[in-house]
Image (cartoon, rainbow, N blue to C red):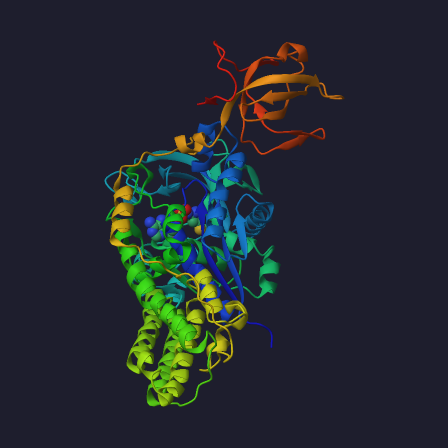
Length: 638
Ligand code: MSP
């Protein structure tokens, strides 16, 4: 039977933004479903990426004095790198400046233009630069942008428009006839409310004279494509042409996962764009809620952006993944606090789950030399545990359809609690005292470990690393990914005779003192660090030392290089310097220079250089950095 396909997407994030827990939240949520569906045997395509055109990028690049392309080539990596650290299993990463994307955007524009779905008109409206959107007079909130409340400008220009308005009734019917299309229901009602007013056509161009950084319209090179019209197409351009996506079997996508802030663009712009090109809208658009931090909106200017990299360093990646999805029902807003995170880590992860694993493995070692025993007697308690496990698995499967992550985790914890209670009730420490008890102990220990195996599979999408470690401790060698959900369809899959392994705790508790310290550090006011600035700690990583030149000779066949032997106090280094056009070797001997002493050695023209000499370059002449008094060699320079 061919593998069933499943397609899930995140928004593509503005490349200018500093990735924070809000972005991480959507991406982790999508990742959990992608991983779960893979465990169920689906062929999954999971897409994320970056949105790289538009005015804000152009502005930021101008401010830095670099080209927009250079700027986005550098910035998009922050997202890519974070996803690696967060264990995101995306199938591809789309960037809207890639050729594959630009080509499809232009093809679609051309097709819509030739079908008269796009027309030119003059337009006068209020433009909000930060939101890159036109508003009508009646949209404005006290004369300002209704979305960001900032000032708007009156702009009159010729532009191109997509006939979005004509799809209004179709869209209303589509939403009403399919309760699964837009979720949660409260958000679906908001979209229907928006569609109560007449739907206007969508302005899809910006004159190049005002904004050159975008995809040129194929039928009028004086204009570039409006950034939203461009960005939304990413969900299909990643698969190639329209024919490619149709043939791929991945369309319609199963879930377009977005934050509530961008639901209208997805539910209205994207669905009608797809309709106009003869394609189905996604099966589901799910708009989740908004994270604030200690009750405030996250913002660079408030210095309260919760940076996922710091959280990972502090608490570990799986703890973050777990917390974000456990703390707040998906769809509702939530408030992030480190205190709550530490609380969940200590109670749910360290005490409940971690303790269950620890004591099971310890008792297995103590009573059975670490080897999983074969079950002997079967009692009512054993059946109750097996039935509970089955009930949890069935419910979890259903809850995934609603993307009810917090309920899924609550349900899974019912099995954690049931297993802890099962052990407490059986009391292995008493059973071991009699021969009859010892027989019973085999079943009790087997079942506790089996329950942990089930938990390992169920929790794997949320905590991929820790659950693989858990499985290894249970002596299961095959990865959860290979085992799949099918491996827990029947109770009793754990192989007797396997050797368990005692290891360090999966989720070490954060004790009160340590928690206080972490919270105090976090509460200390922080200064903003710009992208092109480094901290004093980063600077101090560069080891600068004074060194005395002992020998100097020109490198054969090189116009520029001189090979130096430099005494840096602790040792003599061979250093190559590109200074031959400005200095004669003999004039260098005895001179004190500044050396970067901890630079990774590199070969130049086949000769190893074990450091770098500091120098300035003016009008092609090189000037070695030095001192007005002789400091001697091996002195640190700061
Ligand atoms: N580039 C557009 C999306 C284009 S999709 C074709 C964009 N980018 S964004 O960088 O601003 O990302 C917005 C998304 O990031 C939200 O929809 C949400 O998924 C996530 N979040 C950003 N901040 C968030 C919170 N504070 N809380 C929860 N999610 C948030 O809009």
